[in-house]
Image 1: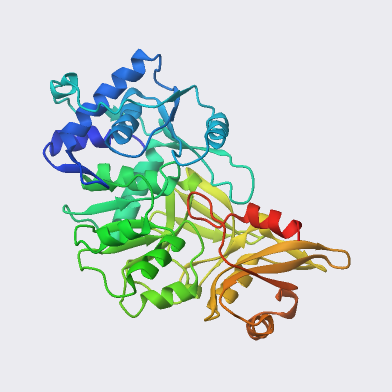
Image 2: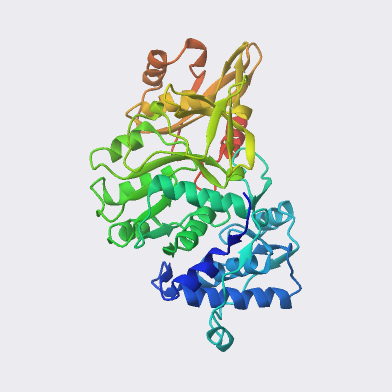
Length: 446
């Protein structure tokens, strides 16, 4: 990408100063101009604390107006924002800050609008270089130790354009974000709202009853969720239709089961299944809202994304969001129409007596069972075969033999789990993904 990019909040405030830019979970409202003035103030605060362009700032605090203005203030200064999750233990955030190479940790003051902000002039939109780093995030760590990913302005900008093309755009949109702000799903949605000059409704975290109530209010147009959140919302309010104003339920971040789609189909819920990755600033392949076709029909890549499968079965993407060609850790295949099917992660490969299999394929089959809510398949050492798959299943009163029979109908014999373990609830990370590491630890002590 060549040329300069406009700071999205600066441009928003310049072009639509009175437009509602932010609404909090408690109902506080702020215009684009108010938010822009606060960002300018926090940029000056960072300078006072010794930060400059290129400083990596571990951004602490509860998501809200102060936090958002501070994030934009980091970008205004040229600092690299590294958001932390206020709901995680201090030691976890300390490790995350170290992993992201933070130069300083900052909890901005909640005194959001002192007189100096109110008196700030309206500035000409600030320009950025496309290759300027904007954020650092840690991967979820659901399968092991987290690692740092740095995202450039060009990646977030390209992601916003491609996502908007697929999901649609209305000037009256309001996007509800309740995902943890230390993950790319939330940060990409925040950037999109500023870029598209629409209202962001930012919640301090996920609360099923609150989110369900807001989705039923008629004020929300788009929401970003992971499958476990949507399932919880449906359990709270039932499967009846949402108001027509809710036109997108962007669903990603973890595997979606066919049983969840079955719950969405009767009311034609506007679910848009998506596959993406942190390194690519979120989405790579996304269905149009309301496409509730079976999972094995795959997901269409975004218009600027090319996907192929290499000799090892890994998905390879080429797009502005991934900074060109990127060999992913996801195993998959392409349908004749070019849609992407995700089979699992390359590091999850199970080799059973010389036969290769990926847990994702077995998990998808188990999730198709009408009595199974969720399933995870993990490898377990075996003295004769090397490894065998073991299924941990969240379900009601299901006889193990019925699950085995179900697998025999849908899978090759070597892919049938050697054991089925019933669990009451899947452990999850702060991003709502299944915490495979905790399940592995549980499996190892049995």
